[in-house]
Length: 264
DNA sequence: GCCCAGGCGTCCC
DNA sequence: GGGACGCATGGG
Image (spheres, protein in one colour):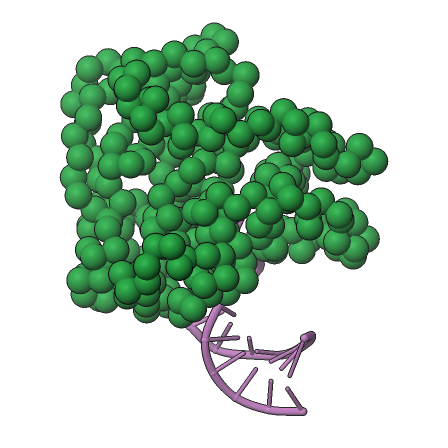
């Protein structure tokens, strides 16, 4: 078990942020997620956060996954003080970090995300993992045996019959997923950029921007989805605010995304 | 049943 | 370059 300082981030906000789809609530203050081929439980305990893993796993993977080395405090302090809407978003959701997720998982997840609600995306991805992902075993905080499924590899989805992918509720995106697997397996890793992912059939500007932000950790990426468009139209009177073109646009976008959704 | 969801490809101008 | 349209499916 690992105990860390809570002040850096809010697990409930991260779980509901729409950047990751495999964080599931177990109880009031406890979540579980699968990342890096491992099942981990995470919970709040007074002023700390507890993790159901070894210290070496935390140092070797989770510390980076949670993006604990980025200085979010200064990024938030540098946000435009004149922009009341952005400041309110930071006040309410500024405890979200941008996770370092697996690139392949992000590509597939955001291909699926198009024209789907977040709960629908989550259940869809869970079905894909159960069907094509390797089974993994782990222990809960209480020492109970847990079985979960890793996110499927590109090879697994490349080999999967398209009908079986379709059975996971992906709808017309089945062919996009196949195309992504083929592209990913045939493209050298160092050639993958927020621009080059648009070569994938089914990946446009918005999904590419999400891949850049969540999969490549390019914090300047600012995905313009229906919510951002609504915010530009309603909160900024049709004019794109400066922060959307700033170095840390992706982080501010995340806070604003959550803030605006909290009103609906 | 109805509406909409962290869009995209295609067609047309 | 931009606007209209169809798209599979599931949650609320």
